[in-house]
Structure formats: C-alpha cells, structure tokens
Length: 412
Image 1 (cartoon, one colour):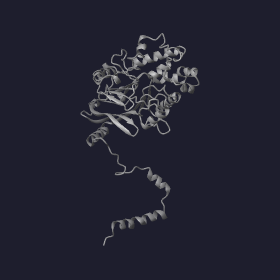
Image 2: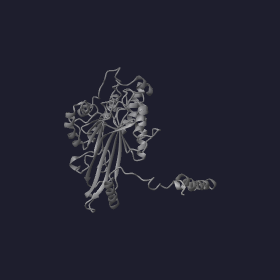
Image 3: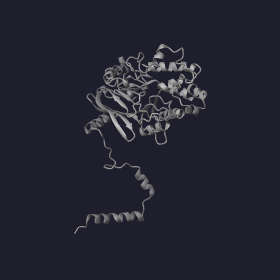
Image 4: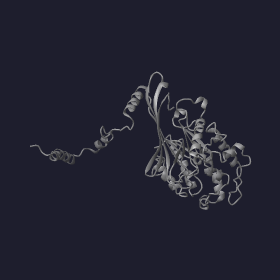
C-alpha cells in the first residue's frame, strides 16, 4: 500500500535537512551560489508587449545590432517655497531616493519654474536643485530648470508674494537681493535656468534645446519632442522661432541687463520700478502677458479655441506636446486636445494645499524588421509614448500612443 503524499514528503526531505544540520555546507559555497540568476520559471522576465512584436525585435536586433531605446522623463510644476512637499513629490515620482539624492531611475527631470515665493524654503530648494543637477550629470542624467514669472518678479524687485519670514532666512532684504543677483541663486539662474526647453524623445534629434529647423527636419521623428515652459507658448507671440533659442536668448539678454543695474528697491513697500530702461521691445514682450512667462490661454480658453490653434504651434516648434505650469488646478494635472496641451501646476505648495503630482513620460522605440538588410533606412520601428499623471497612491494614464515609423535612428 503506497504511503500518503505528506508522509512520503516527510520521509524523503527530513533526512536531507538532518544532513545539512549535522554537516552544514561551507558558507562560501552558499554565497557563490547566490551570485547566479535563477532559471525559469522563477527567474523568467515577463514581457508586457506582444509576443510577435517581441520576437521580431529580438531577431532584428541580433541581425543588425540595433537595440530598443527607452527614455523616461519626469516633470514637476510650481513648488513655491515648500521643501517637504517637493521632496515628497520627487520621491513619489522616482526622481530621488529616501535621502533626497538622485535615484538614477529617470533620464530627465524637468521643473517648470516658480520655485520661489509663498513659502520659506527658497534657499533650500535652489540648493537642492543644484545638487540634483550635479548628481544627475555624474550618471548621464539631466535636470532641466526653468525660470517662472515669480523668479523674474523677484529679480526686478516685484516682491508682492515674498513673506517676511522668508526674507529672514536670507538675513534681511539686502542679503536677499545679493543672493538673487550676484550670489549663489542669481548665478545659478544665469548658468542653469532657461525660459523654455525643447526636449527630443530620441537622441537622433540632438541634445536638449537643439533648435527645430523645419527645412532640414523631415524624418519620421522630426516632431518627437516636448516643449516645457512656465506660462505657455502663445500662437501669436512674435519671437516663437527659431525654437527654443530665440526665447532663451532674449531671456539671457534681459537677465544680464537686470543684473547690470543695482538691485531695484523691493516693491512693496517701495514703488514698482519695472523692467530696466534699456530693455528692448522684444524683451518687454517676453515679460508681457502674451509672453512665455505669463500666458494662460492654453489653460483658460475654450476647448474649441485652443484645439484649433495648438497644431500650428506644435508644427512651428517641432514638438508633439506642450507642457507648462503657472495656472493651477488644485485637483489634477490637466490634459487638453488629446494630450497636446498638458498643464502640470496643481498647487503643490502648502500655501495652496493642492494635490501632490508629477508628470511621467515613458518613451520607447523598438526595432521590428527591415525589408532590405543592406539599407538601415528601411528599418521599421514601433514607437510608443505613455504619458501619466502621478499622484500619491495612483497613476492616471493621459496618453498611450504607438505607431510604426521607418528610418535609421541611432543613439549617437
């Protein structure tokens, strides 16, 4: 009569365990075994893509030496003087670890301006951004930082939203003026911050802030890029192109002029002095209501109006989406016109009490096949872009698009 299964198991396994207890294996053998990966089924990597497409990709990669390309981007809007909430958001999005250091889990972190005002953590936040920039650079990551309208307000003496407790963290008005002009923060604004950015999703389009030139950018990925700005890129703004260098050159020129003059007496309590007298008409338009620092049309105009205008701006800037802060929605990140317009200011600072949020863009370009192996330009690829809004405990997918493209796309 056969023994019941549990009795068989005990009969077989118990002597083996006893042997290990009496004659334990050398610990170095256990450590050595731990170095090896676990074979199927426990160590199997499960692909979420289709089996057919995955098999095609592997075959093509083996035959032609091409590999799938991935890029992950995280963008965060207005922080307004709140270090704890900023740390919570960046850790939630995988930009930093529990110690507040660069995690290495993203390729690009983008902040769209308005770090200053409404809170007391100005010095801490700018120092942290500078530290993350250096840490990211050491591991081939990138931090893209932008000046918002509040950075510019402070630079020209418009201190309407500056708290007395924040001024005290600098040691007084004069010390704050120095820090924001010739001091550490002012120097970082000059060296590391721009008005806008054009971020290609694939490196074959060049590094960040490569100008889009329509006459020479006709391949299938010509518009596979994102624009980031604080306010918005108005369809009627005169200096939109060449994008982004025209806007950023104007910003750099205006900032130099502001810093070439003694700091303006802060208003209040003093009268508002405005832009320096030697600012050009184009520099004044940059800071105007239709310029990239203050424009709110994409957030406030009707769906019909914005969706009828957005394609022209995307065409001219060589991008497929515009991402901006400035106009808060305290409940969620706003996506308009099927994700062509994304507004990421959700009032993260405790001054507003809005929802904590970040925008995630996951981009992949996967080789599929080639009709003529001797011609890389005949290669077919599957391009996929997933845009998500991240909140504590949840992720909302805003865009999940894929398409097949053809061409020779290299990472160099």
